[in-house]
Length: 101
Image 1: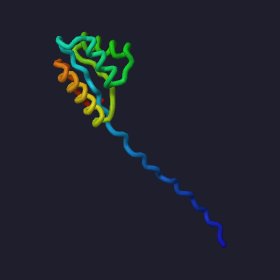
Image 2: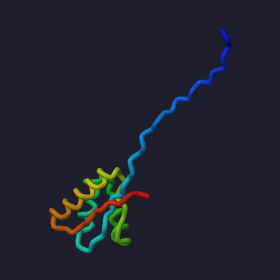
Image 3: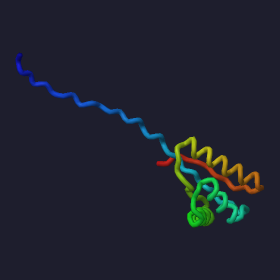
Image 4: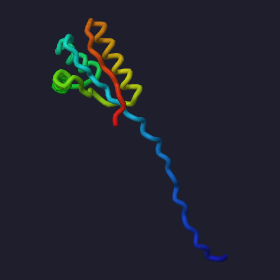
């Protein structure tokens, strides 16, 4: 038997691509009470009260604020549920989504 110099093949491991992320954005309005916005943020997005207050104030002063980042499907679902909840209570509060860069 002859000695052969064989090289081991490196195994290629394919990793699935991470899904693109989307931001949920809270848009300010001049009608929805601050307390309602904080309550909604805590309930739908599970953020602590201090963070909910900070998000609400940022949206109030800058016109909009990123609430959270999720996969597209989850972001769209949460934005729709939060907007629907506000409308069911008679408020024009609006949430939207956009791709994260």
